[in-house]
Image (cartoon, rainbow, N blue to C red; front, side):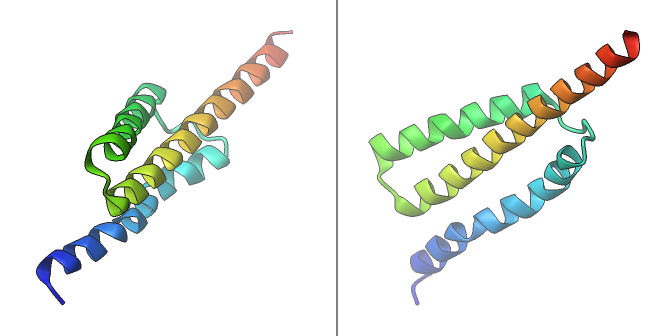
Amino acid sequence: MSFTYFLTVLYSISWVISIIAYLPTIDDLLKGIPSANMTTYSLRFLYYLVSVIYGVFVIYDLAFLFVTCLDALILLFICILILRVKHAHRRKQTKRNH
């Protein structure tokens, strides 16, 4: 097995590390705990979105596209969860004020 092939395989499975890194945030958000910053995660999502577009139109690398798309989808999911938690907290505050 060549070194380049080894790096390609390693890079292709690096998304597992990304998922593991995001799990505590996703878990908190699913429990309704507002532990994530929307600005940070939305900017990271935009970065990965640009990376996906770059991968499609410039480098044509399937491993890169696979990992980048998965990261972008996870970040989008986190952004949706953040909005959901914020909305739920606003509704609770509105009910308390009435």
